[in-house]
Length: 434
Ligand code: GLU
Ligand code: MG
Image (cartoon, rainbow, N blue to C red; front, side, top):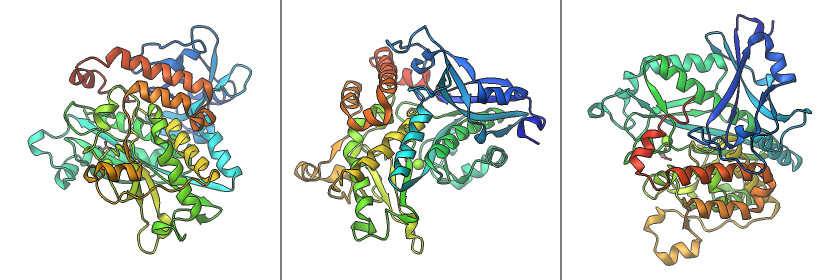
């Protein structure tokens, strides 16, 4: 029996927009196959929705035309309460994939990697604040008591994850007040991004069921810890890992080293994708453990790219964690540009820059210059200029996505850039909640 025939009443299909907000359409479960084969209509303007639902029209994305939202039925998952969910792609009415489809952009990079004989695994970390959970005087960072106190929420969430086939690896209380974190098991890039979207849906809805509200904002409350969207990545050529077993630093192979060089070297051009919201700048600062420095280092939590060595006996689990990403990044796009940068680093034999082994804030200016370490820009005009000039972004994202993303990010900054940050943080606190 198919999933949709088993007592399910609704099927939800979701896409993530350029502001990182998940949007979707719903059909009766009996129409699930239609949702895949013909799709449901959606105006091209869906791609220029801003975080506050304003429309940042561009020449390519305005009031005319129509697109179809088509779910990927292979990924259909039960959410409980008679609801099914699947990720969706944007197609044209004639059935071809729309250039602006972010999930398809990631699928194309995955294919480029496969054509070059390689594959990637991506493991997402999800930080969120559970508003209303524990009073401030009883909170403790990484505290066990605060996790046990939330056992009802956690148990429901893990049950929902199990039902939906979401591979949760672990759960802990994070540093900020009422901040928690879940990590997901590594999966192929598109599947991992789908899982991240699903995880945010489940966290949001289970929180509601428990009288709580989940915030995925990079700055849920001004002056407090931000939420990151750290992404772990490992690469392999056939079965051979590229981040271990080689004769480079920490066992890096030459392709592994070039992949890291490609990521570190391109990050500055990709920040409009990775952390380009009006709240991102408040999180992306030294001292926030958000990886604000454009450099890499073994287990260095202030480096944008932290090299995580595999545990003894499992060297093949060595991976890199890209820390500067925040939850306002569309996960299909953030994965696509990071993977694209790694792949182009490999193709161009990029040279690994010097490793930064200490907190980059403690380096002298001369040492920072020698290692080419800069603070990643959170200034939108700089981010957008760099994105427009980036060969990696042009190849990976294409003109349609860059036009839509730039327009959305720019408008968000025009609307809120000069406003009091505490007020903006409060207004947008639940903008990324599903
Ligand atoms: N909350 C930090 C961030 O915004 C990350 C803390 C950590 O997990 O190291 O990225
Ligand atoms: Mg964390």
